[in-house]
Amino acid sequence: MEERLRQLTAAVRPRAEYSVVHGELGLDHVRVDRDGHPVVIDIENLLYFDIEWEHVFLRLRHTASQYQQLMADGLDEDRLALYKLTQHLSLTAGPLRLLDGDFPDREFMRGLPSIT
Image 1 (cartoon, rainbow, N blue to C red):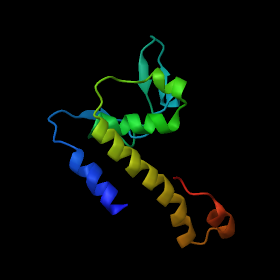
Image 2 (cartoon, rainbow, N blue to C red):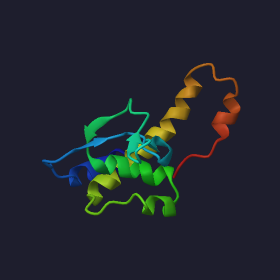
Image 3 (tube, rainbow, N blue to C red):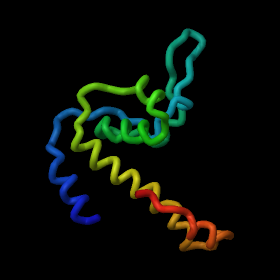
Image 4 (tube, rainbow, N blue to C red):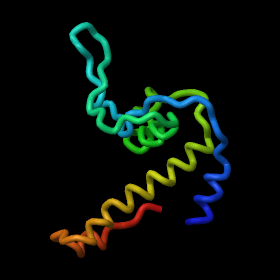
């Protein structure tokens, strides 16, 4: 895993342009106000970062047909690959941290299949 992370990281080139990223954007995080303007809600995770981070999350969260409505051209494929792996690792590690505490059904958690 460490070698794969090193390979993916080495492929990412510096860039000069970043974007405001929601961090966990979903279709349910956009509302329409009385004047018909979109309003983004649930913004506590906003950050100034690579837009690819948001698109990896959008792909994880939505079906392929939903994501097609949100797609953007010109995304950096190297960044997408790195962020996909890091987000999958994060989603795997979170539930496993429950086992460090007093989670009430530890055997159930241990029996969950891992993401491959």
